[in-house]
Image (cartoon, rainbow, N blue to C red; front, top):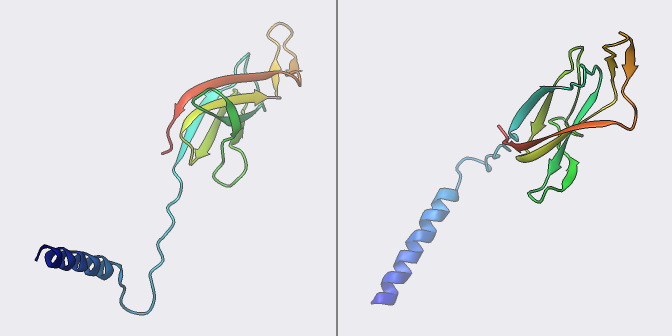
Length: 135
């Protein structure tokens, strides 16, 4: 009798699962793909205000290893260019974790001479954001 009840219970469970998966009317409905969550990181590139500097976001593993660039919503790397006050905003899509921001290039105004000076090509300014959460 126990085997009969177990078989009847399993058969009922299979029918319920099957009934939940059935569709009526001509074809299965498409399940929309959810959009990846995005976040923004805003800041300023400052060693004097650095204008037109390219800021790029990189993934950092839990072990502290810098990886590939963080994906942007339209593809490619999440980057931004600093404005006249050194401000930037980067939109990061579908990534949660530590982020290394690196700023390269651009110009700044020398506070002594008042002249516009290019940032040396080998100089990278960076900062680590320890935790970014998508959304």
